[in-house]
Length: 258
Image (cartoon, rainbow, N blue to C red; front, side):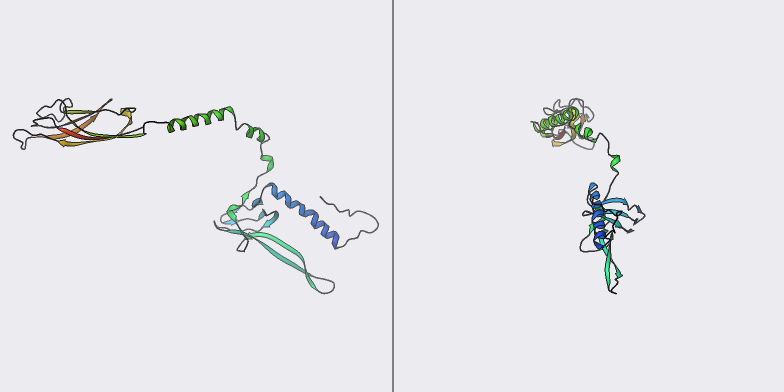
């Protein structure tokens, strides 16, 4: 950083140039804001209620005072310049100082307040941060990634679909007359899981009448039925009537998912 030597003999040449040199010297401190990054809250600016308190922010390479104000989710930050004028010995008033600060407002150039992030003290950075980052690509991590890749490849290599729908029409076996609406050993059709699936993969099943054959005097004391039961290795559908003359036929539809 540049330095001025005030303590010297022979009559120090205190002129405007010396003051300009001081301003040039302390402008170097703006560079410290780059450690935190652009649009950073350096200090202060705590939100109390809906009001952001005073503090300091770093915008486009410049450290600026922030003057608090009420904020909303759409508030924008602008930079304001205020001139300070003073009278000179010749009686003319001129600008001698410029005050620059940030606050909320509307201007051609502005930044969303939500884009500002709070900095943190560098002493809070772990001393072994580099070591921790180097350990990210460890054998354990590679094992996890390899396992995930293997699972993806297995899914991509499937020859059977994840969802299987089967349907059909079939005649019942063990045809018998009588009231057998609760007897799953007569007038039945078996539906088995498709290849590669088990009963645990059954997601939905429905059956219906396809054909019923009557015999005798069908009247108010007769019964017609079509129902199914899910077992450990198959679905049993029973379908008939109490005065059947031949095997009934059923429709069925089953959905299997794995």
